Structure formats: C-alpha cells, structure tokens
Image 1 (cartoon, rainbow, N blue to C red):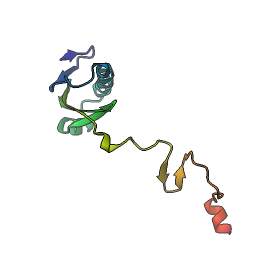
Image 2: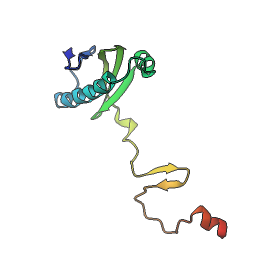
Image 3: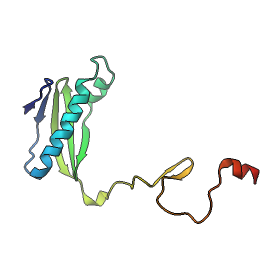
Image 4: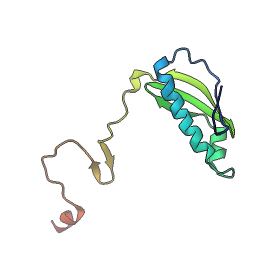
Length: 122
C-alpha cells in the first residue's frame, strides 16, 4: 500500500511476484497518472458510477493489470497477468480504415485516388 501526496492510496490486492521487477516503476507511474486524473474529477461526475462498479485494465509492457476504485481515494490493483503472445501485437497505428478508405497508410498505391467530386464529374 502506498499513500500519495494527494491523499489517494494505491493498494496491491494481488501478488506481483511474477511481474518483472524492471516493469514495476512503469506500472507505478501509470497508476499515479490514473490517480491524478481521478483526484481531479468532481464529486458529482458521472464517471464515479462507472469507475466504482467496474474492473478496469491497463497494459504495461506485455502485462495486463486489473484494478478497481472501491471508493474515492483508493485505487486497488486486483490482478496481474502476462498477455498471451497469441493475441498478437496491436494494429499498426498508420494503417486503419475509415469511411473514406485507408488513411495515413504507409503503403504506396499505383492508382490515383479520386475525390468524390472527381468521381461525380466522371
């Protein structure tokens, strides 16, 4: 358990023995960032209903950590598991589809792309 300067506490309600020690500072930094954001939320924010009743997750360098916020002022880590490699890497950030087709693609195209105005005129 660690109390932060803003009055919040981070509790570890699960064993972290299998987590690589080099990863723990990054985990702590991300949890502190979450706590900072939560501490700045208004008491009457609708976010509290969601956060208070859900198990949330963050991913840090190949590990998935589950946490919950049982009440204002406490963030509790409740699970730590390595992410199976079968899930594969996340999608490439430069390759995604939208209504207009591929955006920000780093793949060269051989055919010119026409705008809807050029298609209408054709």
